[in-house]
Image 1: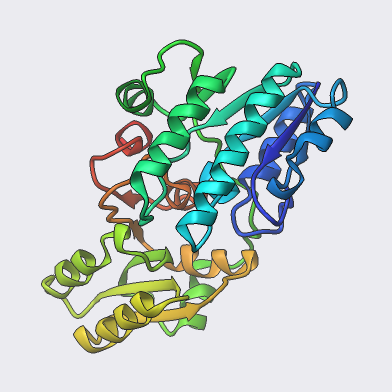
Image 2: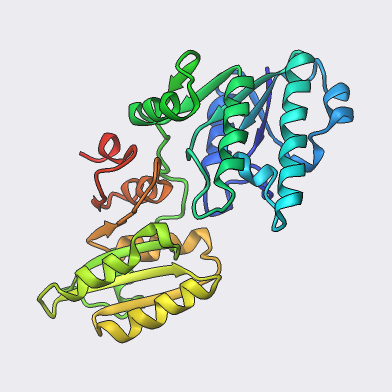
Amino acid sequence: MRSVFYWGSEGLSLVRSNPYGGLLARAMAERGVELIAGYDEDLNEDWLIKNRGQVDVLHLNWPHYMYDAHDLGDCVSRCTELIGHLARARSLGYKVVWTVHNLYPHESGHFELHRLARLAITQLATALIVHCEHARARVQEHFYRSEGVFTIAHGHFIDAYPNTISREEARRELGLSEGQFVYLFFGNLRPYKGLEQLLEVFSGLPGDDLALLMAAKVYNDYGEKLVERAQKSDPRIVIRTSRFFPSEDFQLYLNAADVVVLPFLGILTSGSAITAMSFGRPVIVPDIGCLPELVD
């Protein structure tokens, strides 16, 4: 069996910061399924006809990346094309699977368009995959699908990243002392991450031995302003910023931390929580989405 997985522009490489796609391909190969990288620009009538009988499954993960555009008109046009291509794929005998990592895109406008797209995909899909029972219930509530929905836990990332730096080495490189208790936040600085609340709560905690280490991906005005606020709010906050952290740097921050704190305001599944736990770090997360089923 061959399945095309529409994961992202980097394909299924394990070198990228999120190894989910590459790990899924490796795991599926052990079960006799060849998972190959798919690219939304290739999904068209000619491709579907050419690959009929050679590809069995079209597997979506984040559908909005396949039709997203700055202009609403372009977004509607691309979305319409995507749904049309998926319908054509079903008529040609392809199976369509959607892994519901998120119900809707984070911080995206055009909610009704995204809802209509997901309703259409849900109805066209041969099967849906969710990572927890909470997600299963939300799929039924939002998209009216209860049959052909399979709960498969999000896989771990143990050994997916380099992990050779000791706690002592990591702290020395980051300028942290052995006696400090270090909270870590790592990831993109985006409004749904709850970072304003994190800064407020941490600044209210007593103790000169506490530190909040932030490995922050900054790529917009929101992130820049949040970094500026953090730098001014508390001298115990240590910030390292980048537009992209190489995979080999993850060990530096995670091994330096005592606990990882991820104060999401809204989420289903968290790759960040999976990553932290894969490095053996305890995590503090809110009681929302799939997180209560992931973290005891």
